[in-house]
Length: 337
Ligand code: SF4
Image (cartoon, rainbow, N blue to C red; front, side, top):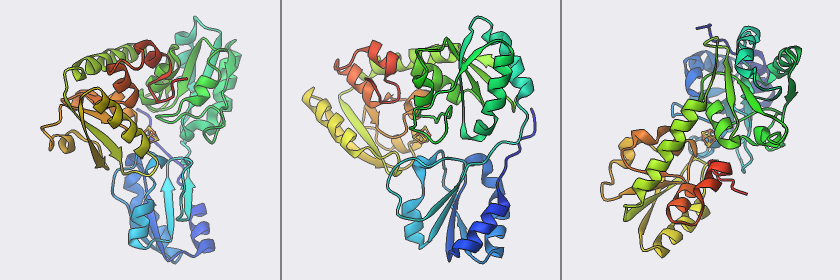
């Protein structure tokens, strides 16, 4: 595995603190960057502000620690690793996107044999590699590919995908035969394949590996079908409402509760911060859960829960109000059209 290296923009951090002069900063880091917390704290304190590190998990900008900042009296949030998501934020926030400092050429070159059957390729990545998209595009073009980088304008950068937003991949759906995802791991690539229904290849520069994800995508679809089938026997449902500001979908939760009740089922609403098996195990009287929080929980972590954990669209399929084909076509991330 290659050494991971990321640009934490320490000089910019120092400049921002010196310029804005906050009294108390709340620092949020994604899991892989938490080991840098003390070093970043020293930079902020040397620039004249007090800093508190948020030690809670942080998987996306959907989880901006606004209420925690207010509770602590912090007048600035410094959030690393994600681009802003649109919801009302009334605490000043600086985002550091954290560019990866790793060579992609060798890995993208390794992906070319996997793309041999297709000439029109959609190119996608995470914010950590957006600055390398032009290089990846050139490498593909030099290999004779026609490359499409979608720009839906729903996320900050063309070609950027989030774990729950593949609109840039979908934007070029009709033009491409397959996708290349440049970045670490299978997580985003599986999302691209589910959201588009097209073959997706990973070029992972950290592992220096390239591989397709179709087998995993098939496995996820089969697991989801099994979960829906199992939930058909459930009588008592728990509807999960996230307390994370960018994930809270209260109206969606209320609507699905009403629908479940119309079908003669009981539905109890649960407010929740971290959706984990140990939290859900506290409610043994619930037969199945409907998750209105992060859609990846149902897709990726469902086997760990021991009970069905359905998304809203999967619940509609279970109730016979949506077709499985429509879910497969465009419904995994809550955007059936
Ligand atoms: S909702 Fe889930 S997938 Fe979407 S940004 Fe948040 S953590 Fe990531």
